[in-house]
Image 1 (cartoon, rainbow, N blue to C red):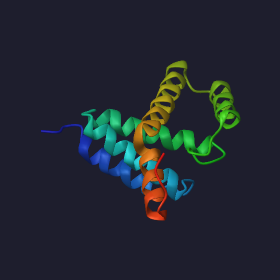
Image 2: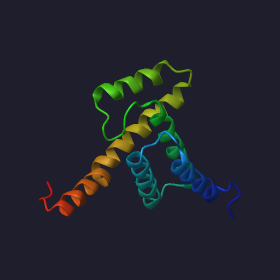
Image 3: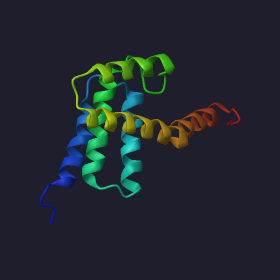
Image 4: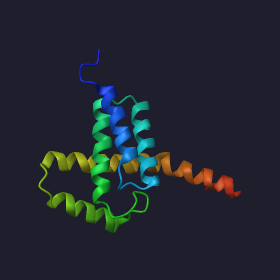
Length: 126
């Protein structure tokens, strides 16, 4: 019995990602794939929801797509985060979530998409 309605919260978070106006299609797909990856790793629903909403907050303050963000854009994002009114723990959580998101994307989300695009163009994957 789910007294906290965790599965409902996950479905609502996924719907929010799909409806979020500031997300590009590429970012939306990357976040949704990452959420699916977290669920397949066995993270509980509450943690998955926290990751989803945190990535939306971070993207609202990132001036480009997640994939296109370089060092300067990430430093701007961290400058905003460090100067914000949020608690130290929340800042710590957002930094960790962003780091794990990029690590997860580097381990396969974006590289798989790039390989499939290369195969469709007849190029050899790198």
